[in-house]
Length: 173
Image (cartoon, rainbow, N blue to C red; front, side, top):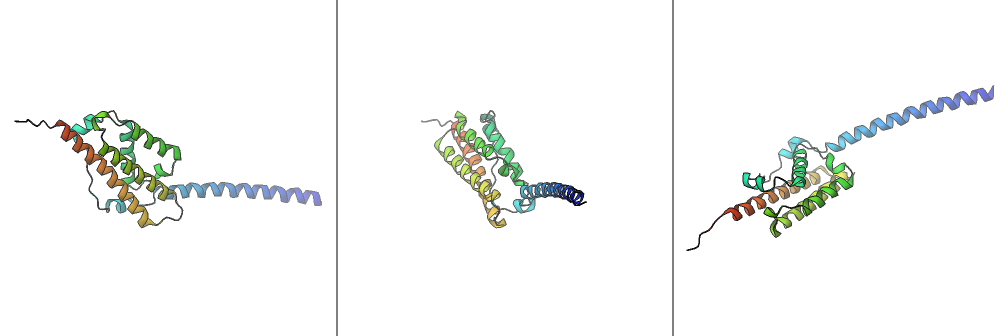
């Protein structure tokens, strides 16, 4: 009788522990959803910064620069408060940054643009580290988002100015 009771209690414990594991998986999935949207779209739109878009000539000059357009997609997601890209695998962010730096088209390859891209990379890594930090402050995160968006805007502005300067024909008397 003791042996049968022991088996019944063991089976009950196994079933109860299995149920707790599935509940834990659901909680972690909910936590992941919360972490993707750490800030709201309204909070991001309230940030004050100058947002420069690309000119048509600049877009034509960089139309084959795939890492830039991947970065543009990330920026559009950040503007709606989705920071899921920064919580993905570390290799994904590093690969984008490496490709962005190494594949700059000749039409926009200059020291000033390289410097702006370096600042953008730094702000991207800062935002990534804050997004993955468990003890983050919402104000610090919003400031990092603002700095990241400003750095991206400065890259756009500098590329526009470079293309504008290259197109200009100054006649000398």
